Image 1 (cartoon, helix red, strand yellow):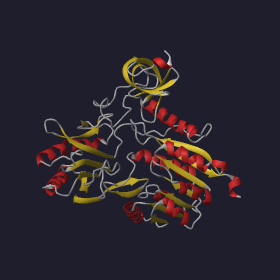
Image 2: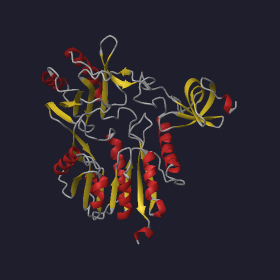
Image 3: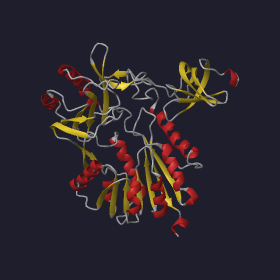
Length: 459
């Protein structure tokens, strides 16, 4: 078949050789790349072409001609519909190989690195039951029943769930039963098209080490009749539930949480043990959803840095101090930078609670604070959001020239972009990249990159 004959609606046979960073299988046909959801590396499949471009196409799986040895039966009965996971049909070892390939390809194609030093992916202890936080959009079925779940792949159709295999299994009873309570109370469910109705999302959170739980309803406004008595009933029913809160989000937005949260019953935060320290975690606190894998990645950072107790360290984008505080126990002085004032308040509180006195926190955008910090750090830890570091952050680092940079990334494309800038002209050398799997059953991969200042740049 030639390029001219490759048309939308045609059926072609493709060997799947890789998995993309969006979760689709990747194959080649007639010199062009074909992306096919629901496939596995090693599959041979018949694909119906849905979208044809000059250099690539998107297709729909029609038939599996030959099954990959990495194809397994999903653990979830709605895995083929629910958009919460993309890879439940893929053996976990195959998932880890695909994620390492994602990191390598990003560093090569975007970063320009030749044979980047990428380790095997740090896998999760368990690829199921790992999530310590879930937020479910709510809906109403055709028969008027309250539903909670994730949206169907490629649509805005809610797939109702009573349990989820990737969340901590101790949360399952609440997922199934709280929907019934909302139904009995007669509370209205938010309709985003009309911007009407009360309850938008159900949020559940658990301390993996402590077992303490939080239940949060995201509401359009505070007017929720009988919420106090229902909250007390939930506390009585679930012994591990320590707090019930409302979060108000009155905007027309896709954002889940609004800016204000009120504790209705119990306490506003749960306790979690991380790296031997106790943290207070609120309903909307950023805290990695895979506690155990985050802790394992921290150990890699600690081992690689091998701090001797005399170092000055800056933790940019520090959040509530999840990485800041464990590293402060091994350094002389640590400064955390964070734009969200609420996170800094929690970080200060967590430091005081754990008796850590050699750390200070500053509120503000990293690109504005870092140039005027007034110190020359030995180590800078970067943990930016998905968009990566701002240009001025990179410029400041190249001016300050800390001996070492540790870059924790939740999006390898922006990691590769920023590493290219930091390693330009040989100022820094990329010595190691450690990917980590914080989100098994999905295409998402985290990575930490280690940079050292070159001897020439030190002079």
